Length: 288
Figure (cartoon, one colour):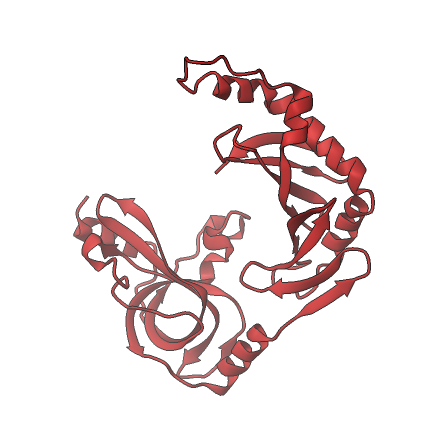
């Protein structure tokens, strides 16, 4: 499909009226997905916006989208920077019957998606948007007596820490209680159930992964192409001992993902065990 046809198709999803906004970009700026061969859809998320000329501040996240060609990949036409205020011309996404669904594009309401038409001014100053930026950059942290010190990473809406996991370093992420929240009380409460009985949970994770993946590990072992020496089979016991924790994530509803390094049984792929604290482990698989 030509750029002209793709642009017409893309623009048809947005209102005809062009409006002006001041937007404060987030850290998610400059990414792009391919729509057709040689045609890309870059995006720039924003933390808040101000309508021009009425000056109404909307502290709601949104996203600007547009189309670009292969020749535009250096800067995606507009060369937008993170955490910067711009004055833009844009067209709002048309509302449809599916707008209330949970699978909204970019995880946002469609009414807050825009087609970027032009960048009018750059590197602006605006007191209300600068207040939003200052609040966004404010350090938020807490210390738990059992689990240690956590710091908010606003870009991902989680608190992170490095904890001692039975002698190994493990990066832990606790999802915030709300999308815009600055607490992780629910995720922390669930994680403490695991961290307080770490030997039990770690053994269960290892044993579960071994039961699920030992056969696959042996398939990979025999597929090395090395005919000089027969490799020693991997047992469930040896599999469980070889893997090592590296990351752990927990959400407010008790769902978790435990990431274990594979000791090269899958050539460096990470092993993920997912489940729920209340209902148990659900699956173990390799990724990466």
